[in-house]
Image 1 (cartoon, rainbow, N blue to C red):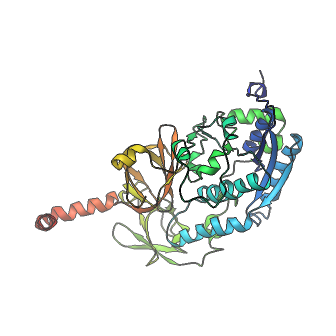
Image 2 (image 1 turned 30 degrees about the horizontal axis):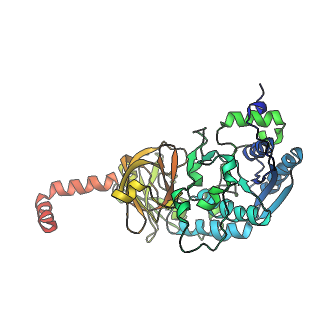
Image 3 (image 1 turned 120 degrees about the horizontal axis):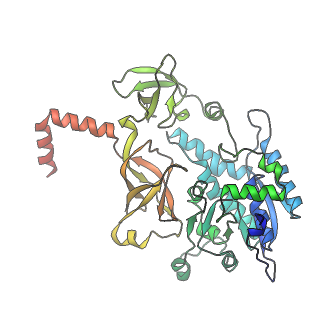
Length: 426
């Protein structure tokens, strides 16, 4: 039996209109194909969000747009282009630059999904094109069956002061896709409940290998040949230091050993490095790794081992947490604490943790074991079983193992100070 014949086909009495985000890649191409096979009226839309050439002088967005158009032509689908270059600059890229200047390491893919794909594009699909639903090629699923998506009503902005009680009691939930290696709920962890309510993920139950087989049977060879996109969302792969220095003024400073304070070399700016990254220091034969940054002095602190204690910590605080269902889990509201799992990098294994809810909506996350290179600016994404609960940006780090070891050593050398400190605390 062919791959295509094994895909469920839904023929509706009245064809529902679905707008599918087309990137020119294999995933969105197969997503559009599956929607057509289910009997929907599908419109393909390509988003242009960046307006320059890559490092080889190639305009990748034009090539991707051509590839998306070819798929739509094969599938006999209407095709549109829409530009969000201005919105991407103001809401994603400018935010990225500000975060780097603050010494943080942002995640533009999560921000791009929140502001571009699942806000501007979603509104365009529903309001301008009159879609009943939108679709993307993400490997994720929701608590709604496809037909239930069409029963959701779009609530236009501005929102009323209070939400409908039924809407709060029955939120749409976001779950991991069948292909756990490709699961992309991490990147969807900041999207709104409204957008999720009217989104279909056709690849929810498929693996990447199966998607490639479907693409091959459909004759989408031009998209199968393309590499997976791995660079900054909609910008592509770049030499990071050269790229970021096109937009931020160099801020030269020193690499300083966390061990003894010795100056090890010079750098062009703290924003060109992130925690855990290998610092290529001129004249140093052995590898050194970034363990901390001080943006007031411009110093980047480095350690001599990849798992240096200064890179290991178990606690972070986020900003106000974004819950996919708009409300924290009942268990967390009731007790202010909850056990679950989290990750702060897309493909890192899920780590058991305890979450503490603060009055301002932020959360403290305490991992069951110290983790390497927890980084301000990254997003801590929470999971309960298969469900992605949402995410919050890491804004504060707990003490590192290196700091705790130094404190312990100081206390052991000065027990009297320790006793006096304990008496004053009591």
